[in-house]
Each structure stands twice: as C-alpha cells, then as structure tokens.
Image 1 (cartoon, rainbow, N blue to C red):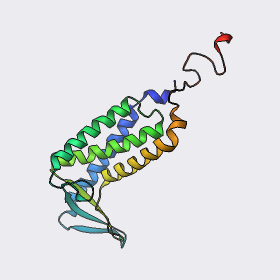
Image 2 (image 1 turned 60 degrees about the vertical axis):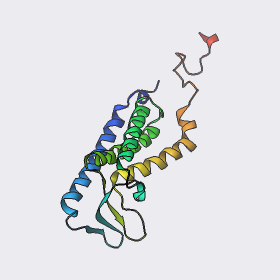
Image 3 (image 1 turned 90 degrees about the horizontal axis):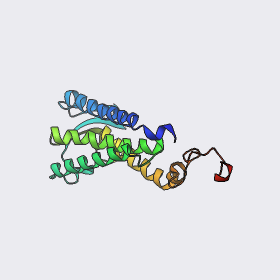
Image 4 (image 1 turned 30 degrees about the horizontal axis):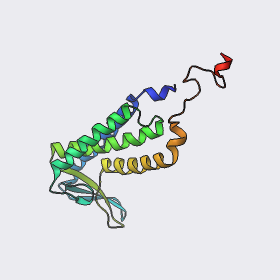
Amino acid sequence: MKHWRMRPMPYMILAAALVALDQLVKYLVVQHIQPLGHVPLIPHILELTYVENTGAAFSLFSEHTWILAGVSLLMSVVLAVAIWKNFFRHPVGKVTLTLLLAGAVGNLIDRVLRGYVVDMFNVLFMDFAVFNVADICVVVGGIAAGLYYLFLSEKLENRGKKTPGEDGKADGETDADR
C-alpha cells in the first residue's frame, strides 16, 4: 500500500493553515479597512472593500444565515470524513477536498461568531461579487475536485484494482509462481 494513502494529517494541517489565513485577512480587513470602506490594492483591477455578507455567493439566501451555517457545518463534517476515510486516495484528490473543507470552515466561523461573512476582494474591471479567501478555496477546490473526478480519478485512484504489492505478491508474480 502506498504510504501517502494512510496519512490524512498533512491535509488537515493544510486546511487549518488556510482557515487561519482566511481569518487573519478578515481580521485585518475589519481592523483597517472597515472604517474606510475600501482601499485600492491594484489600481483599476482590485480593491479591498469591507462587506458584511449575511448570505451565500452573490448574497443569495441573505435572510437565512443560520441555515447556511448549518449547511457549512454539515459539509465541513462530510469533507473531513471524506479526507480521513480516503474518498480520494491520491494526494491531488485530497488537496481538492482540503480546499473545500478550508473554505467551508472559514465562512462557518464567521457565520457563527459574527452572524455574517466578511468579504473583501472587489474586482473593479467587471461586475462581480465581493469575495474572501474562504470563497477562493471553495471555488478553486470545487472546480479542481470536479475536474479531478471527471478526468483523473480513474487513472490515479485505481478504484477496484489492486496496486502491485497490495495482495502480498511481487510485481508480475502469479499464484502459480508461489
């Protein structure tokens, strides 16, 4: 059995680091940007804007913060279990789930502690929702997980197939060779 298949801890550490980054950025925005409203980051491209979002993406379900918190909690548990139980066995697959977990937990913390999610990244060159680090994790993780499942999982996961050495036989060895 491959050594990386049995170790979920590095992925949990990565998720914790991404959640910490998300919460740090949110803290800094609350402390320094909130009083100003917005601050240019990359002129004409990106600014930091303080937004209190009680909903989901594009402020959908804005009157249902606690339902969204419940969904975030449920998804966080499902994703943590999926990582722990090796739903995806390959590291690339596990990283996609880790990104989703970090995003769910990052926004869950805000919903529970603040009653809203702090968003801050405002793209200036197009009309788009203001978003945060956790949202980036969810979007990148979701797209990556979908692509991984559709195009790579069959090759990298070897579901239903034993890898050399898993059955106690050497590569190319048959029962007749024993």
